[in-house]
Length: 117
View 1 (tube, rainbow, N blue to C red):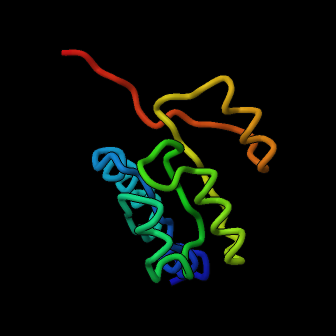
View 2: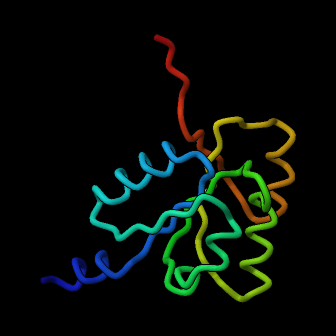
């Protein structure tokens, strides 16, 4: 096994989203790149887990019940967890961009599309 393969197998990408289908789809995508994943239905669940200590990257929804994205980021910073975070949202807001840029964010990604049958 190469050093790069070892790094990928030990890097944990944690996924926080209250929508189970988004969690599962994100897990499949990240796992297809050979990363280890951990899934959480809420920011509180992630913060209370042991995975908060070994997460290499966090993918989190913006709008969730309980702690939202800004509160999650603030808690991580306050607890000295320096984890890169990718925030996703199905409902982008023009006014949320400036607020989030002041907190060090540079881009948003929509989490999923709506399909009609």
